[in-house]
Length: 444
Ligand code: ATP
Image (tube, rainbow, N blue to C red; front, side):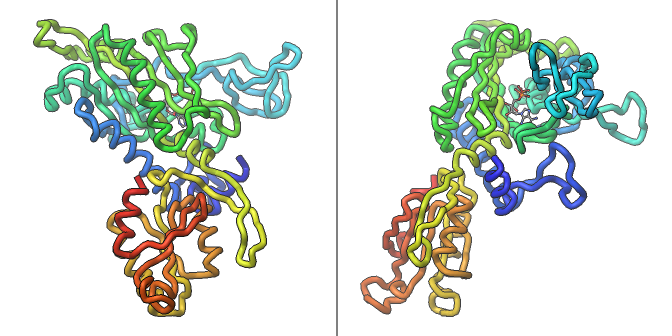
């Protein structure tokens, strides 16, 4: 993990938030490469969840949430973790983080045994909307994106004219005042969720729970997280939310242990029924064929953007041996991202920076490729060093413009370049003409 955290900072994936002021715990900023990685992940999720399906539409709800919504959903009352303080080192701890030695509970930081009794700590961030700072102005930063989907269910049903089963998808920020943020970005206080609420008839719920679990496993494989690193945990009855008839956690083998990436839950009709009761507005669906009116049930796959980004980086990180400029073997750090996820798709390098013809050709290639993909132009340093810099950030392809491109050695090679593959380090010669199409086929 240390190597990964340091690479993330050194190469501009992830920085601590407000770092120059000492940082704010549990908050992170994503740099130039991190933001590309995040966007690629979110775009691919949106593509397969919304654009490629006829039965899912999207929405984008507000972050500040009316307290009535979160009262009805149960968050104001119950969205809390049991907290214990260590009187010795003053740490605030989540009850399940205590360590037990010889049957005695201890503080994991200092080993202290003088602990307070557990008390419930609500994880929601509260704020005030408008100028009047009183009870009536309280609002919350949403702790999950799902509630705005439930609250807009009727509007979206009407405008989209979808029939059951159908889903509403959303990607957006969520906030939780976690007692103990840790494991780099894994448990943060501000994060993004990719959530789908897939509404159905009651009798379809269990079957759709299985269906969505399988779809989500396929998704992770398609972004480069192999099936053997993923684990499906069936959440036991006593740990499941009381309204859920079945929940799976999809877990990944992080370097710090096996941890949840995503929850897939069959939430029955709990959320819509609660909002119907509390708002007094009907959230029922009318099934024209069966001539039935009922509150739909829902299956929810809910994934975390940052946790998936972290899994992608952990999975991609590798070290191998490669020859340096003088042919001596050295350790090479490579992020083996799937091309569709890689922040930069292609590096373009003129062999020499002081040769205007080489530079001109390389820049021409950059402008041809840029409308289609992220490209990094680099003319400084030995070519081997430039390859290494791109390997380290996971750029899958490298294009080098050399003297053969100018037709100096063999006129038949004029306007061809070398195309290097990050993983095999093999090079092939392709024409500049064919390059955009070749890369387009390989970056999906
Ligand atoms: P955990 O048990 O790890 O706290 P959870 O079961 O409370 O997670 P859910 O409420 O099911 O999480 O949220 C769905 C997803 O949102 C999680 O699988 C995770 O990917 C993401 N998520 C939840 N809390 C955090 C957090 N504090 N930081 C980053 N991602 C989070």
